[in-house]
Length: 230
Image (cartoon, rainbow, N blue to C red; front, side, top):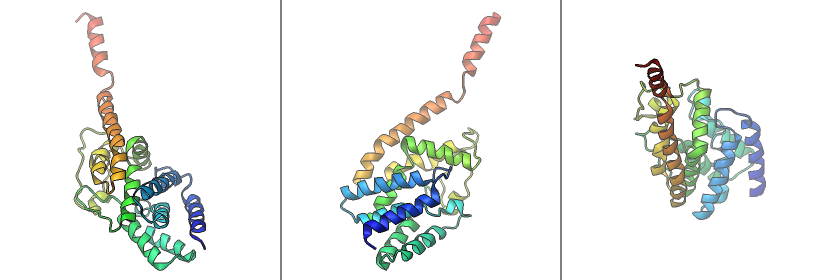
């Protein structure tokens, strides 16, 4: 099967598995990572065939939805690629990318071994920040039944993947525990440039969110006092 046909068939496969998913890890997340990966790959002169397949399959069976099983995603991806008779060297490269792509905690290093891996990781991280990243964070928080924000629960800089996997903190904490860290973890110059504006947008959002957190309580209290003659 020629490379273009393999990509088309993989697109159809992933779409059929992830369409309509509501946690922010749906087909459209994969679509954006796929398109961003291809763009960065062209800018960085990398192997677009490997990049596109890894991007399309990177969330085919995410550990977050399979009891923390880190192996199921690579296993499903390998089974699919073998079905399409993809060369073993290419399969191994793609599986390595899928295994290593995820953020595993602020204190856990997740280096990628190849430029293709770096690019797909960058594209995945770009989709976790900015306006889309904000929307995805709250979609996932709602999916997991987490509080939107609780000022009594402080962010935690997780020192192990197990600690990170078992975290159940409020969604706003996730910005400090992960999302605001991603700009400085980008691998490529192209991604670093793209991340700047998205990072600033998140900072602006958080400033506004925390400003509005108390609501109009103080203003209402002042108005009540004025009207009562106190």
